[in-house]
Every structure is written in C-alpha cells, then in structure tokens.
Amino acid sequence: MAPTLVEHVVADAGAFLKQAPLQEFGQNIYTLREVLDEIRDRTTRRSLAVLPYQLTFREPNPEHIRTGTYPNCYPTQNTSEPGVLSDHHTLS
Image 1 (cartoon, rainbow, N blue to C red):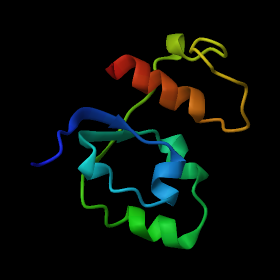
Image 2 (image 1 turned 90 degrees about the vertical axis):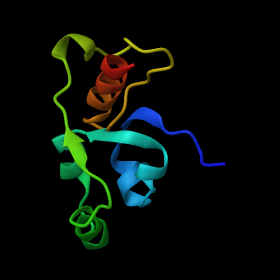
Image 3 (image 1 turned 120 degrees about the horizontal axis):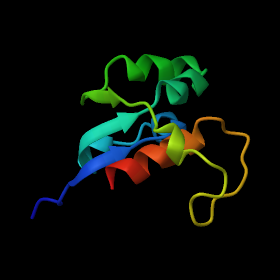
Image 4 (image 1 turned 180 degrees about the vertical axis):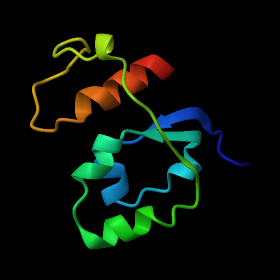
C-alpha cells in the first residue's frame, strides 16, 4: 500500500540539509528564498540544483509574522523560521 501524501509541505533549512525526500511526504513542496539563503555548505547547495521535485517559493504574509503568534513559538536566531511558520499557517 502506497503512503498517502499530504497536499502541502513547507520546508525549512533542516529538510534540505538532511536531504529529506520531501516528494515522499507531499504533493506540493514550498519554501522561502530566505531559507535557501541560510544554506552555505557546498554539498547541500549542489543538491538543491537537482531536486527530484519542483520547489515553489512563497512570500509569507506579514500579518502572520509575529513572535508568539503560534503555540510553543520561542524566540530564535533563525530569521526565516517565522516566515516558514506563517506559510504553514496560511496553507493549512
């Protein structure tokens, strides 16, 4: 029995650093340009050039980006994380 795919997956830098097979989780894969800007290592940058799925870039809604807007949201050094959470909120 084939696994059921979710409709939307919003990826942060960790998914790309671990080279997660996102196409096995969802039909549509989204991220932010800021997320890719965080990735510095050569191996991961090269793998981004040959992804086996189409990556869709989104811009988070500024109204949804506020510290503490989401349950269990803690301040972070990661500047793209609020945008990733905003996209998740918008798509769900």
